[in-house]
Image 1 (cartoon, one colour):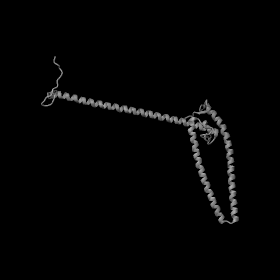
Image 2 (tube, helix red, strand yellow):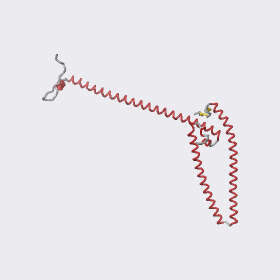
Image 3 (cartoon, one colour):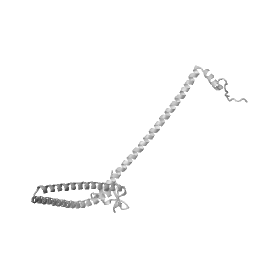
Image 4 (tube, one colour):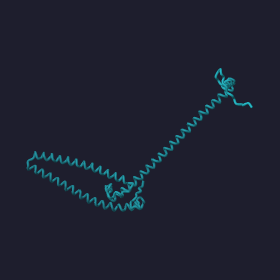
Length: 242
């Protein structure tokens, strides 16, 4: 039986295949109507390809937009949670600080310095904050101490200059009188300093008694409200209101 498979042969004169020759003949044989249909079909194929690419691009942009929106939503949620957590931690610490003030007064944190016997009494969430307060207090103390020493040296230097000046311009008798007056003013200044110190100590003692008394009432109220809880480990836990 003869095969129906199209056989492609080469034209030795032109180098073209018989099949391409047939395609050219068929193209030449097309009527204007056939060409119009062919052009319309080709235009539709191109249009469909362009439309497909457009839809694919729109789908890509839409997917990227949704991914970006989802990312922004996750970011906003993380930031909100972090902000809420920070606000709660600040409220808890504020409650703890108030409690410690009632117990120990100003500079209460110095009772819990790193390496001290009471260091472990600090609730774990507040440890770093307490140590930071201690370091800041030391920093301020050193600055004030340096400033005080500077002022004292300047004052002593001024006194020495004045002493030499008065010694040079006054008679021996008048100089001794001036010197006694300076000594008297110095002792009066010391007495005033001691009196103020005694008054401050008395005031501090009274404030401490009042603070301790008020602190007990305050603690009972906070524990009643559930803001402060005594844990099984014997340590207080703090749940400040935001």
